[in-house]
Image 1: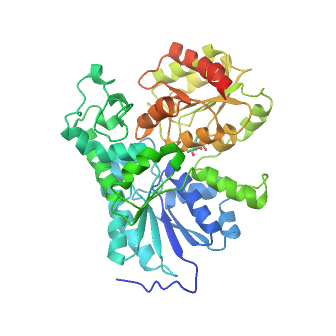
Image 2: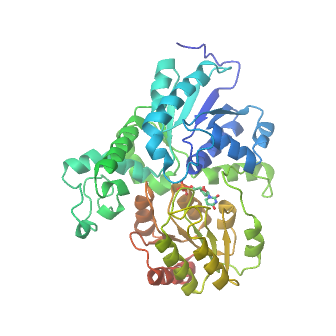
Image 3: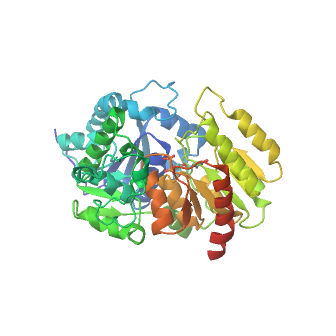
Length: 445
Ligand code: UDP
């Protein structure tokens, strides 16, 4: 069924549809805002659950006030509203519950939209949006929130398998270079592949098939948008363009948006936040009292969970480094029963009174641009990596899953702006890396 989409007398209407996770919402809402500034009518389609949190913790009503053509709409993510959605909840539901229910709701939103939607910008993970767009005759662009290099590795997985480079044969094989990802032959090792490549048991191979499927389907859209710049990922963008000529590198989006808004309204402009947790801004007062480049920021994003043993090593590595730190520990982010690891955090708080500050959720973009920071101990989610890069803060990389293993290799070996601690969680190594990053890399900035 085709709607009348003649849009000659009105601004084009774009529907932006993110995967229901913090890292995906962050970059896609920034893209939506940039399009609203450019004069498009914008519908941001969020899950009910995340929209409730956006309303609770942010000034989002201001989006519609500032841009008259900006509206939020919500649909189900397939789970009841009171489901905790902790850890990797989305992996179990993506292919069945989420796809089934979201697909139906997306179709309904599009059919009933007035004015009609002229173009969908869908999160590439939600590949079923392509089927709905085709059925309704609406052009669709996929947006991938992960790094272009991980996208390219995921695309290449069938070739890596066919060349016999996967599965990996035991731990001794982890430093072997992978030769079948064009453009990455000189630095991509087995240990830098996404974690689902490691042991290919049934569960991992299901996830791998899903990643390959959504990656390849992304290239069937009318175009592909990536959150990067030619200067950062040029050689890999050229590779991706051999499969899909219309690839647009529009990032880093947070920097693009800040530049636009600062130019228009001045540096003190009240930027929208779009966080799904309550931000603890008290850390800014603490940071204001710290000398320049004296603090390391420690945060592992919105999904990672650590084991209690890992948390102990990380805390003692920080303590022994004698460096000041701002640490983010999300509630229930330690694997185990509710509140697991709280005693470790309390002990760290007690022992680091004069040089540590711990929060549940930080205003990350703001803290990374604070002059007190000399380093970022990160899990290398793509948003965090770009935010650190733009702020000029060197990284210690401790990747967890998804694109993070590829990203940490790029940070340390290609961009050479960080140290990679992947596959190790040892207080002595962390202590040394913190000191190296704070002293050696800082001198080079
Ligand atoms: N973030 C934040 N405060 C925190 C931790 C993270 O605002 O205390 C933001 C961070 O700025 C980034 C996003 O949450 O934009 C996390 O996205 P990323 O891609 O780095 O990691 P993910 O959460 O998807 O693993």
